[in-house]
Image (cartoon, rainbow, N blue to C red; front, side, top):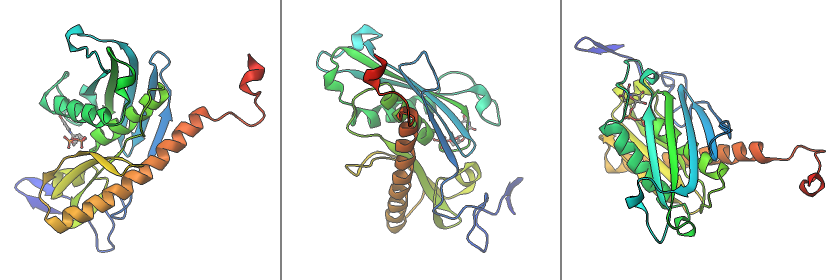
Length: 253
Ligand code: UDP
């Protein structure tokens, strides 16, 4: 442990190349995804990722509110990312602040590039992301949950959006930062990828990395997104697979 002023800085990387929670630099935190836990939403998903717990609910396509936002040629996507007051160590003031507005905006833009909005003119697709417990990477967990919830709602999309943050910790490029790494590391770069096209639909960065480090971070982050993508597809298969021996759908009519 080192210290800056009164703050203790934990050892972020040990001599064996292990991180604060024992992970290697290219390892994700444990992740579990459940599709469809909410019965009143058109689509939903719950994601537990490290110590993050995030619920997403999707409604629509439905009537636009407020009505002046309606577009005659396509659906609009409205996303609200919200962090519960009890989700963080120091109670957060309830309600939307600048950070949650920014996150809602970048997530909306990420989905605008995959959802076939022109199929549903004059409607709204509403995405609610509720962070119940936070430990860094909540916008990525929110994107993953919302992507699964959109698929669960049957919204036509070019592909799922997968997301993970990558950053720089103790001088090395690391995948999927947790809170201490986000707080005491040198950089944090959340990414979102449309895996089939290889297109990045979200990239943000806080901190400092040089050109080579950014390149390495993009490679590692892209690999991480592809790993997440496989987990997302598995979660959807688990939700929709027909158990062996179950009657065929036509036999149930
Ligand atoms: N955080 C907090 N209070 C806040 C906002 C954030 O304690 O008001 C914590 C929370 O654990 C969050 C982390 O700081 O996950 C990193 O926040 P950041 O803005 O980088 O977004 P995130 O990494 O969650 O997408």
